[in-house]
Length: 208
Image 1 (cartoon, rainbow, N blue to C red):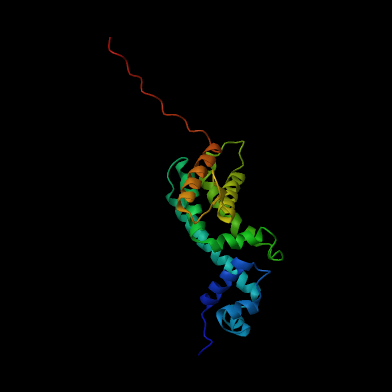
Image 2 (cartoon, rainbow, N blue to C red):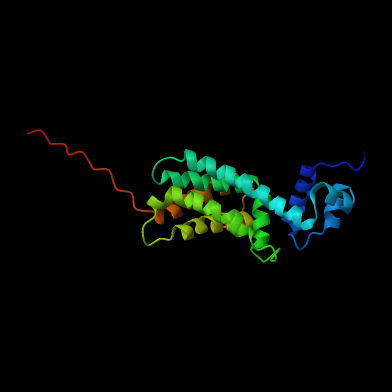
Protein backbone atom coordinates (compact mmCIF):
# COMPACT_ATOMS: atom_id res chain seq x y z
CA UNK A 1 0.00 0.00 0.00
CA UNK A 2 2.14 2.91 -1.29
CA UNK A 3 0.29 5.65 0.56
CA UNK A 4 0.48 3.98 3.97
CA UNK A 5 1.72 6.32 6.67
CA UNK A 6 1.46 6.00 10.44
CA UNK A 7 -0.32 8.39 12.77
CA UNK A 8 2.97 9.34 14.45
CA UNK A 9 4.67 9.99 11.10
CA UNK A 10 1.92 12.48 10.30
CA UNK A 11 2.26 14.14 13.72
CA UNK A 12 6.06 14.32 13.38
CA UNK A 13 5.78 15.93 9.95
CA UNK A 14 3.17 18.40 11.18
CA UNK A 15 5.31 19.22 14.23
CA UNK A 16 8.26 20.14 12.02
CA UNK A 17 6.16 22.40 9.78
CA UNK A 18 4.18 24.03 12.61
CA UNK A 19 7.50 24.67 14.36
CA UNK A 20 9.06 26.22 11.26
CA UNK A 21 6.10 28.11 9.78
CA UNK A 22 3.53 28.34 12.55
CA UNK A 23 -0.06 27.12 12.43
CA UNK A 24 -1.26 29.98 10.24
CA UNK A 25 1.60 29.52 7.77
CA UNK A 26 1.09 25.78 7.36
CA UNK A 27 -1.62 24.31 5.17
CA UNK A 28 -2.89 20.75 5.16
CA UNK A 29 -1.65 20.47 1.56
CA UNK A 30 1.84 21.49 2.67
CA UNK A 31 1.85 18.82 5.38
CA UNK A 32 0.62 16.20 2.92
CA UNK A 33 3.21 17.18 0.29
CA UNK A 34 6.01 16.97 2.86
CA UNK A 35 4.87 13.47 3.74
CA UNK A 36 4.44 12.39 0.13
CA UNK A 37 0.74 11.60 0.44
CA UNK A 38 -2.52 13.32 -0.39
CA UNK A 39 -4.49 15.54 2.01
CA UNK A 40 -7.23 12.91 2.19
CA UNK A 41 -4.72 10.39 3.53
CA UNK A 42 -3.55 12.83 6.22
CA UNK A 43 -7.15 13.44 7.30
CA UNK A 44 -7.94 9.73 7.35
CA UNK A 45 -4.86 8.90 9.45
CA UNK A 46 -4.69 11.84 11.87
CA UNK A 47 -7.47 14.35 11.23
CA UNK A 48 -7.70 17.83 9.75
CA UNK A 49 -5.25 20.68 10.35
CA UNK A 50 -6.92 21.76 13.61
CA UNK A 51 -6.84 18.21 14.99
CA UNK A 52 -3.20 17.84 13.94
CA UNK A 53 -2.24 21.03 15.75
CA UNK A 54 -4.02 20.02 18.94
CA UNK A 55 -2.21 16.67 18.92
CA UNK A 56 1.16 18.28 18.16
CA UNK A 57 0.77 20.66 21.09
CA UNK A 58 -0.47 17.85 23.36
CA UNK A 59 2.61 15.76 22.62
CA UNK A 60 4.88 18.76 23.16
CA UNK A 61 3.19 19.32 26.52
CA UNK A 62 3.43 15.66 27.54
CA UNK A 63 7.17 15.59 26.84
CA UNK A 64 7.73 18.71 28.93
CA UNK A 65 5.42 17.51 31.71
CA UNK A 66 7.29 14.22 31.98
CA UNK A 67 10.61 16.06 32.22
CA UNK A 68 9.37 18.49 34.89
CA UNK A 69 7.65 15.84 36.98
CA UNK A 70 10.89 13.86 37.09
CA UNK A 71 13.07 16.81 38.04
CA UNK A 72 10.60 18.11 40.66
CA UNK A 73 10.46 14.66 42.25
CA UNK A 74 14.25 14.28 42.29
CA UNK A 75 15.35 17.87 42.94
CA UNK A 76 17.72 18.50 45.82
CA UNK A 77 17.00 20.49 48.98
CA UNK A 78 16.82 24.25 49.27
CA UNK A 79 17.77 26.47 46.37
CA UNK A 80 19.56 23.58 44.68
CA UNK A 81 16.04 22.48 43.69
CA UNK A 82 15.68 25.66 41.64
CA UNK A 83 19.06 25.05 40.01
CA UNK A 84 17.98 21.50 39.14
CA UNK A 85 14.74 22.75 37.59
CA UNK A 86 16.51 25.51 35.65
CA UNK A 87 19.08 23.05 34.33
CA UNK A 88 16.47 20.50 33.26
CA UNK A 89 14.33 23.16 31.57
CA UNK A 90 17.28 24.62 29.69
CA UNK A 91 18.61 21.22 28.62
CA UNK A 92 15.16 20.08 27.49
CA UNK A 93 14.69 23.05 25.17
CA UNK A 94 18.26 22.96 23.86
CA UNK A 95 17.64 19.34 22.87
CA UNK A 96 14.10 19.95 21.51
CA UNK A 97 14.14 23.25 19.62
CA UNK A 98 10.82 22.49 17.95
CA UNK A 99 9.03 22.70 21.31
CA UNK A 100 10.33 26.22 21.83
CA UNK A 101 9.44 27.16 18.24
CA UNK A 102 5.85 25.99 18.65
CA UNK A 103 5.34 28.23 21.68
CA UNK A 104 7.32 31.09 20.13
CA UNK A 105 4.83 31.23 17.26
CA UNK A 106 1.99 31.44 19.75
CA UNK A 107 3.66 34.42 21.41
CA UNK A 108 3.10 36.41 18.21
CA UNK A 109 -0.60 35.45 17.97
CA UNK A 110 -0.19 32.39 15.75
CA UNK A 111 -3.30 30.17 15.92
CA UNK A 112 -5.07 32.98 17.77
CA UNK A 113 -8.42 31.22 17.37
CA UNK A 114 -7.11 28.29 19.45
CA UNK A 115 -6.75 30.24 22.68
CA UNK A 116 -7.12 27.56 25.36
CA UNK A 117 -3.72 25.88 25.06
CA UNK A 118 -1.90 28.07 27.57
CA UNK A 119 -4.44 27.27 30.27
CA UNK A 120 -4.50 23.58 29.35
CA UNK A 121 -0.79 23.02 28.92
CA UNK A 122 1.29 25.85 30.41
CA UNK A 123 -0.61 26.63 33.62
CA UNK A 124 -0.37 23.06 35.00
CA UNK A 125 3.40 23.09 34.55
CA UNK A 126 3.72 26.43 36.34
CA UNK A 127 1.59 25.07 39.19
CA UNK A 128 3.70 21.92 39.40
CA UNK A 129 6.96 23.84 39.79
CA UNK A 130 5.45 26.64 41.91
CA UNK A 131 4.33 24.12 44.54
CA UNK A 132 7.88 22.74 44.73
CA UNK A 133 9.68 26.07 45.18
CA UNK A 134 7.09 28.23 47.00
CA UNK A 135 8.92 28.05 50.34
CA UNK A 136 12.09 29.40 48.68
CA UNK A 137 10.42 32.54 47.32
CA UNK A 138 10.27 35.67 49.53
CA UNK A 139 6.93 37.44 50.09
CA UNK A 140 7.79 40.36 47.80
CA UNK A 141 8.49 38.09 44.79
CA UNK A 142 5.66 36.58 42.76
CA UNK A 143 6.41 32.89 42.21
CA UNK A 144 4.77 32.88 38.77
CA UNK A 145 6.79 35.95 37.74
CA UNK A 146 9.94 34.21 38.93
CA UNK A 147 9.13 31.18 36.78
CA UNK A 148 8.14 33.45 33.92
CA UNK A 149 11.55 35.11 34.17
CA UNK A 150 13.21 31.71 33.78
CA UNK A 151 11.03 30.87 30.76
CA UNK A 152 11.54 34.27 29.10
CA UNK A 153 15.29 34.13 29.57
CA UNK A 154 15.66 30.59 28.26
CA UNK A 155 13.46 31.18 25.24
CA UNK A 156 15.15 34.49 24.52
CA UNK A 157 18.60 32.92 24.64
CA UNK A 158 17.56 29.99 22.46
CA UNK A 159 15.75 32.23 20.00
CA UNK A 160 18.23 35.04 19.51
CA UNK A 161 21.38 34.34 21.51
CA UNK A 162 23.39 36.88 23.50
CA UNK A 163 26.04 39.41 22.61
CA UNK A 164 29.59 38.22 23.07
CA UNK A 165 31.76 40.60 25.09
CA UNK A 166 34.01 41.35 22.13
CA UNK A 167 32.20 40.62 18.86
CA UNK A 168 29.30 38.66 17.43
CA UNK A 169 26.64 36.58 19.13
CA UNK A 170 26.77 33.57 21.42
CA UNK A 171 24.10 31.02 20.60
CA UNK A 172 22.75 27.74 21.91
CA UNK A 173 24.70 25.68 19.34
CA UNK A 174 27.86 26.69 21.22
CA UNK A 175 28.25 24.46 24.32
CA UNK A 176 30.43 27.07 26.02
CA UNK A 177 27.69 29.66 25.57
CA UNK A 178 25.11 27.31 27.11
CA UNK A 179 27.42 26.69 30.06
CA UNK A 180 27.93 30.40 30.75
CA UNK A 181 24.23 31.14 30.28
CA UNK A 182 23.37 28.35 32.72
CA UNK A 183 25.66 29.91 35.35
CA UNK A 184 23.98 33.28 34.78
CA UNK A 185 20.53 31.74 35.26
CA UNK A 186 21.63 30.21 38.56
CA UNK A 187 22.79 33.61 39.81
CA UNK A 188 19.65 35.33 38.54
CA UNK A 189 17.33 32.84 40.23
CA UNK A 190 19.35 32.99 43.45
CA UNK A 191 18.82 36.76 43.62
CA UNK A 192 15.05 36.21 43.57
CA UNK A 193 15.00 33.56 46.29
CA UNK A 194 14.99 33.79 50.07
CA UNK A 195 18.57 34.54 51.16
CA UNK A 196 20.44 31.56 52.44
CA UNK A 197 21.06 31.60 56.17
CA UNK A 198 24.79 31.23 56.75
CA UNK A 199 25.80 28.24 58.80
CA UNK A 200 26.73 29.27 62.35
CA UNK A 201 30.46 29.20 62.90
CA UNK A 202 31.75 26.99 65.64
CA UNK A 203 33.42 29.08 68.32
CA UNK A 204 36.85 27.80 69.11
CA UNK A 205 38.36 28.94 72.40
CA UNK A 206 42.01 29.82 72.11
CA UNK A 207 44.22 27.98 74.57
CA UNK A 208 45.41 30.15 77.45
